[in-house]
Amino acid sequence: MEPLIFDWSRAQRRNRQHHPATLGADASSPQDAAALSPFLRRQPAPLPEVSELEVVRHFTRLSQRNFSVDTHFYPLGSCTMKYNPKVCHTVAMLPGFLQRHPLEAVTTGQGVLACLYELQEMLGHLTGMAAVSLTPMAGAQGEFAGVAMIAAYHRTRGDAQRTEILIPDAAHGTNPASAALCGFTVREIPTDANGDVNLVALQAAVGPHTAGLMLTNPSTLGVFERCITRIAEIVHAAGGLLYYDGANLNAIAGRIRPGDMGFDAIHINVHKTFATPHGGGGPGAGPVGVAERLRPFLPVPMVGREQDGTYRWLTVEDCPQTIGRLSAFGGNIGILLRAYAYLRLTGAEGMRRVADYATLNANYLMACLVQAGFQTAFPARRASHEFIITLKNEAQQYHVTALDFAKRLLDFGFYAPTVYFPTLVPECLLIEPTETESKEVLDRFVAAMVAIRQEAMTDPQWVRDAPHAIPVPGGGHSRLDDTLAARKPDLRVPPLLGGR
Ligand SMILES: *Cc1c(COP(=O)(O)O)cnc(C)c1O
Image 1: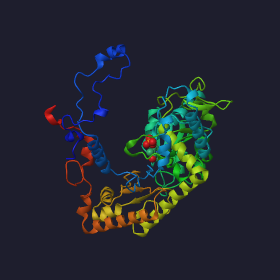
Image 2: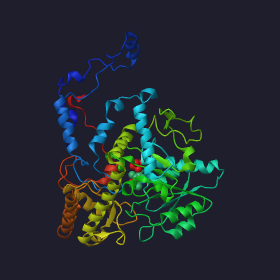
Image 3: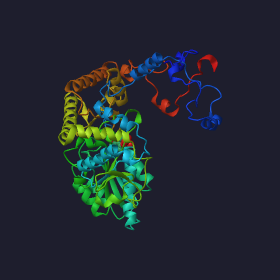
Image 4: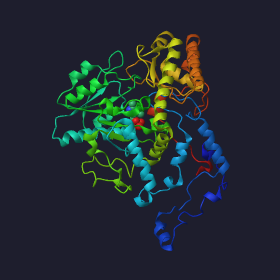
């Protein structure tokens, strides 16, 4: 069992500097102290009593048990886990940003508002949208905002019969969830054998009930939707709008723009494309951009610029048709500042190189794996910034699955690619190398995949039992039961030392 911080606890071994004797000792007046007293603890909190050095060692050791972009290649398809320049973090952590209270007057926050305003502008230019609101806290919340704006648009026009959102079967699960949360019925559109949207099915599905279509391009199948302008024509002709899921924007940024493809609303996962690796599920930010006709509905607050060059928050008074607020204050500003720093750092030229190298790395890795005998899901297609291989042959011949490969990759020092998503492709690995990896790292990954397949032929049980080199809670190095961990997580903290 991995020791808990409590296991290192010894009575009185505390760091007095960081341990005020009485809580409430910082009350500024006797009246304050009296007012606080009913809320004060009667007993000291049962905290571990450890020296500073023990605390540092304990948490440093735990952090080394993890995989991260700082320690390992992390080819997690669809999620874009790439190296992000540390300087973006440094900039966002400047004391002037970090210590600013969100309710402080705008007169003392012109700097941060200027950054946010410029970020709105840069994201608008980069995506070809008329206006941007930064306030959604994640991609999924951006989707919710986008669909809510589409709903508001139809409602404002008095068009009450548009109750359906069309979504390709390859879509991320958040797309149908967002549509359903906004009260729409979801209608699934099939993908054809080459990974494009089936146009015949789309044409048959659109009609007076169509509120819009949600699409990711390049799609989560790792291919660029070649008929996108035709798709936009079909949906627009039926009176619907187009929503762009921007999770894969890093594949095309600086080259082509969702606005030019015909999209009316988009979100941008700045934590996937513009700094901030989002391990552990957050934090993130999901700014939304819209075409002119959706501008009145954007969520507030946004940052506006006055004639005299000063900045201020635009609220519901400025935007009476807004869908409203989605987050406390301005959104996840620390993450937005990282995106701002990243865009400033790369510039328009650097942004194109990001997209180019993301695509080059994916196609290089795909070609190497094909050469090594692995099968891609769409052999006729070039990869975008990610691609899918299917291990259905390996599963049939050696009874070693995509999950087994993924677990064994951990032993080789690689975080596993996304497995079993998209659900259309059996035994799939969705691999996204990102633009920040060297050829040597990609070559080592191919060598590991080849080695695992060799093991699958000669000693399949070894692969099925993997990982062998990763310590697990409870001791040993065996495979954890994923289902049990998800359905019946054991989150108990053992009783504290000393029987407290
Ligand atoms: C990550 C992702 C989302 C959801 O974004 P979050 O920021 O995680 O909420 C939506 N669609 C696709 C294709 C994604 O990869």
